[in-house]
Length: 458
Image 1: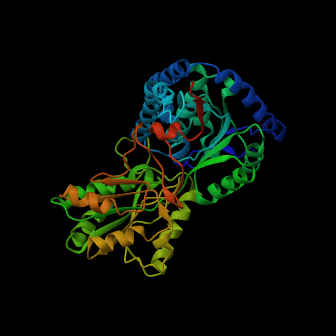
Image 2: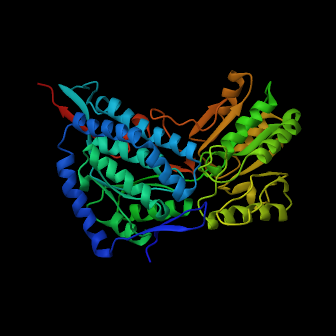
Image 3: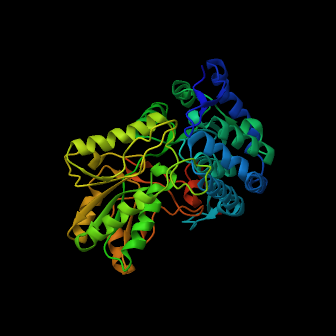
């Protein structure tokens, strides 16, 4: 049986299976992509930008269909799914609008020559390994800049995202990307490892777990291929002060419960100064209790199912284990009986460094709240994990908050907002959250040949 299956996490029913590629078919992908690369790289950046603009237009035109697909296959509430479709479309449009200019040659100080010029050229076929939690957005971050540059793509999506990944390929091809310049690949992890090792492949980008990232990075390094990794996170949300505790708690809950908490850059650790702690915790618990859990097609539902029963059970076990180790559970953490992969949103406190929950990522609707006595203690706690994706600092004094944000060991630091992602802003982390950057001009520069052309003085 194929591992590429649409198993609806709302109903628990398997709706569709997709045929996986054979080893022989996977073995041909490198050559196919390399042949397409010779064609695609020789189109102009303006022509490639036009295909991305048409892609954005098709995302807008087919928004309902695209949104429904991921609501069905991974349980994202329909309104959030539509928002993700719009965000993905905006990324394609941003690179269509700005990409050609960013690829223009850069004139340097001649430094004794007649001319010193930096040019940007594509490097070749790339492998993308993408996760299920943001099926369209994650792919757009990788595909849009690299197609604009002139690279070709072999895209392996998560096995539960077979339907949405097929839709993405269909849209790109309809927009004008040649079929072999972007190939949707239903392959196993072992097959992808073999594909990365193929001499035709120039690099690989993965968004996913630490384990998957380490495996891909190892194969890439052994074969001298560049890799970009966007991995997990345990983002801090530091509250120094606020003039409206209820509003801050509402923002915190909304951010944590979006996508049922299944986001690498979701705020997972709420670090609150003493004088606000009790009020904030009480308001956050109320928000979590009131968050409606249920059918993601219902507009009134805030929290849909997790992506699968196994994902739901993993989070429930993490919560239970934290309580066994001495953490306090204020609400939630209960598996909802019946079909589907539902879990009631949970709030944990009294977590200490000797507990597993202190250091691990909980990929679900669970908030961990910490009490601290000073901003310095908040920073120390925020940095005392192996992750470094993003973090935020909240205060009525934005200047003070910015000073604290500058001390966070993260790739993205926010003041009075959390997790903002826009096409022109860099996205990525440090430490065990990975390396490399996506989006903006930074995402355009990861898989390019930054080539010097120098002409000697007369």
